[in-house]
Amino acid sequence: MKPLLITIYVPLCGEHCTFCNRLTTPSTMRMVTDYTHALLTEIASAAELCEGYSVETIRFTGGTPLLLGGTNLATIVFALKKHFCVSPEVEITLETVTDKIDEHNFRLFERMGVTALEFFVPTLVSAEHAALEAPGTLGHLSAHNAMRKFYGPETLGLHLLYGFAGQTAQTWQRTLDKACSYDPAYVRLEQVANMPDAEADALAKQAATTLAAAGLTEQDKTGQLFAKPGKMPHWVTLAQTGADQLGLGAGMVSKVDELVYRTTGDVARYVADVADPSRVIVEVGQAPSLY
Image 1 (spheres, helix red, strand yellow):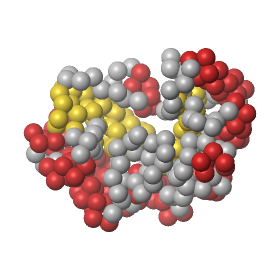
Image 2 (image 1 turned 180 degrees about the vertical axis):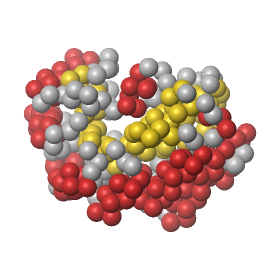
Image 3 (image 1 turned 120 degrees about the vertical axis):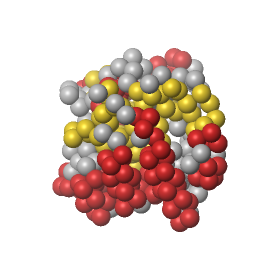
């Protein structure tokens, strides 16, 4: 069977981060219910398209997927296992931010089979965190990491930003050093502002040097992913080898058996019309971006 990467985008968010350009919608109780039902509908309708595939990795992304609720996330995972051929060794990655996770979630993750947590922490410097109006409380990351080690999952990834206004080589070094202290399996970097190439290159080289000293080496040609030996996320491996992807949720790109399409980024329209693909598919034939 051919390998398949499934990415589930959850746009629910109540934050107004200054650096964010992601698709978001207010996290109301009504939207939580409606978006969950829409995802379940899309899962059921996409199953026939994905016959002959083995689902090897499932990613929940969007910044704060946990705003959908742990029970709803579990329901979605169980629906995927019902409608798709899911590998017994499936990798399930959940992106999250601090303050959106608790002991109940960790206990639920074990039942869901979550194998990796990726914390989106734009900076690990308190002053920058406040200036960026970044989500969550930095101090909670240590507590979350302690719970992760106690309950699982085994893998911790960090997603860091660089290049934003006010950041310096000194504060970037503080973020990198703090990130390494959490002993992550991998670190993803993202440049978020237009800046002179020389400055961006300097920050990127600074990161590569620091992460390499902590045992994390560059894993792709972009210089944005670093991992310990044998710890590179499987979804990245699939993306690098050109494996097919099913994107579930508003604004997602899919490529399945040479069929390439994108769903509408209008969340209300996605929720209302997901049962009718002709109304929610807005582009066909554009190459997908799996990162």
